[in-house]
Amino acid sequence: MNLSDGHFSPLWVGIGWILFALAIIWSIRTAPWHKIKGDSEAQHVFIGTTVILFFLWISSASIGDGLSFHVLLVTAVTLMFGPQFALFAASLALVGVTLMGKSGGMMFGVNAVLMAVIPVSISWIMAVLAYRYLERHFFVFVLFNAFFAAAASTFVALLSAAAVMWLGGLHETEKLTQSFLPYIPMMVIPEAFANGLVILTLVILKPQWVSCFDDDEFLKGK
Image 1 (tube, rainbow, N blue to C red):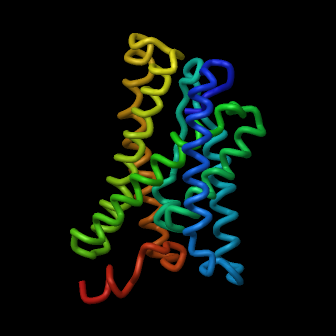
Image 2 (image 1 turned 180 degrees about the horizontal axis):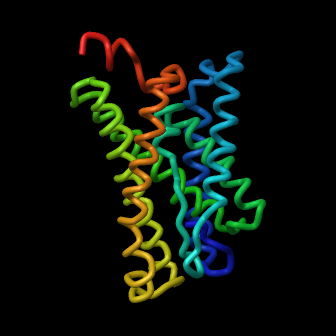
C-alpha cells in the first residue's frame, strides 16, 4: 500500500496531508506522555517496536504500480501503546520507508492515513467496544482485540486503498478486481494471526508491555 508520487492530483495529496495532520495534532494533544516520561523501558520498547515496523513495511511485495502488500502489525502496536503512540510509531516507520525511496514523499499523508490512521482507529474502536460490552477474559482479549481487530482493520485499510486508487484514477476497476482485491483475504488472515500471536506472546511473557491488558481484569478469578 505504499503509493508513489506522480499518480494523484494535488487534491488527493492535500486531503491526505490534512487528515494526517489532524490525526497527529489530536495524538500530540491527548497522548499520555506521563507513561513514558522517565520510563526508560517504555521508551526502549517504543523505539524497538518502531524499528520492527520499519523493517516489516520496507519488505513489501509489489505486484504493480501502487499495488503492494506487507504486514502492518498496527493492531498489536495499538494494544501495546494506545492509539496515540501507535500512530507515532507507524508514522515514524513510514518516514523511514519514505526516506528509503519505497514510498512517495508527496503521498506521505495518504499513505499514513491508509497504513496508520485507519487501522489504528479501527483497532482502538474495537478494543473499546470489547472492554465495554464483552467479558473481560484473557481469550476474549487475544481473539477479539488482537485477531479479529487486526483482520477488520486490515480489511478496511486495503479496501480504502483500493477506493483511493480507483477514485484517484490510478487503476481502473478491472485492474483492481484482477490484481488487488483478490489478494485482500490472503493478507487479512496472516495479519490476524501475526497480531494475535504477538499479543498472545506478550501478555504471557511481558504483560507490562501491553498497556491495554490488565492481569487483575483479564486473568484473576477467570
